[in-house]
Length: 285
Length: 330
Image (cartoon, rainbow over all chains, first blue to last red; front, side, top):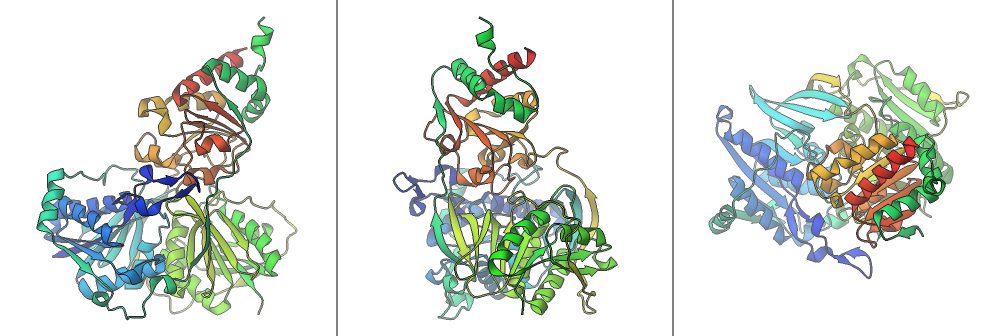
């Protein structure tokens, strides 16, 4: 049986980020969480492999590392069709950079899923956008990896991946176990995520089956501190908005547009490389 | 031992992407502050042409492994080689272009070397202790973080293409080529490339366009968003978009302007219905002149604009198209 591990991150819902208008910063603690869109595509890829009868029996484990509230995305994964959900959560894991996140996910797979054949991740999460955890997890597990998959297929015990990387269309192949990251951009509709009926999520909540694992379950010693052990340190965080003293136009659209061309026509025509008549309404008189 | 700043040379799409040259330019500035030597690292098969190019663009030394075994980009072999070279020559800093291949190789090298890596930097600096300050959008892209790697070495960062301006080509520049033979113990690659063909997403690029028109959700709908292409045709411009627009499938992902997309530096930028989340605005800070349209005068994008039109994006776009047609005709 092929055991697929899907790494799922809970991210803040970007469209609804609450801002503190006084400081101009994000009130992250009150942000709503959702399943990262790229991870959702990775889960979809796993579900499609499972649905394909030619792949043989498939078991899907969804795993997430994060605070207790990240459990929500695992219930959602269960409702979508994952067989099992596992949350790795412990105060000592807070503040992990990508390197430490890979170490923690790696511990889980090595100890609890030694039979893992295929590991799927989103290529890039929508919040931190580093694209680093997938490749670093493969490195931690010492298995081959292919990034940015748009399509994958099991062929004679190998995995075959189609991808678009830096203007190259590529077809790659590797033996299992291996790790694949699914393209977050989704230029093909192959892994457009399915939606789950509300009833499905409710049922998943009722049946439970989310395992919670802490530091001990992952064999991390009591001195483990992801923040401290992360090689990168954040020195400073600031809101980058630099305001210009630009001109603000209001009123009827036609009037604003005329002002735009009359007063800034030279800039526009020079960028276009073409002469524009900039005062035609004057001359029309 | 001399201090070195390394730039991993990504030349696979040399004619499309100038990211290595751009990073070499920034590395040259940083090297002046820390008294370091700027080095490029080139792997491949028959790469003399690139070596000469990197020297002409600021590399004082170029480490080169030139071998038919390296004729296609293979992330495992390349990461193995790069890590081995870093262990041997111990550069202070290793910079990699955030191309997709760069974003595959850099995390693996960082993990092999047990060092930190900051993704997609929008700037680099040196602090008063001589450490590399890696400046990257963070916290969902709404804030900028200054990140350092205090203890581990090398200090590693990937840099989004288009972030820095390349130095002019200098034919008289002198640089030393240091050949490094392929090690005997290269591991056999576990990933096989069955096919790789050049397939550019688009012939023209918003990264190099003089005029760019970006649209956000404020355009209203996929159908209305198309109007931006009419305006682009008149202005000889390229169309870009924010992330929500790309995610809503109003336009393909290669048009995305932002931290996860393209970094642009047009002479003139029109922005329609864009609120201005930092992951978008950070990528257009170099636009020379910005015209923004938004119903909300307090939108961040409006505050970045040279001229801000408080209006419905869709109506304003129609108005500008009308006016432009008239003025071109006249």
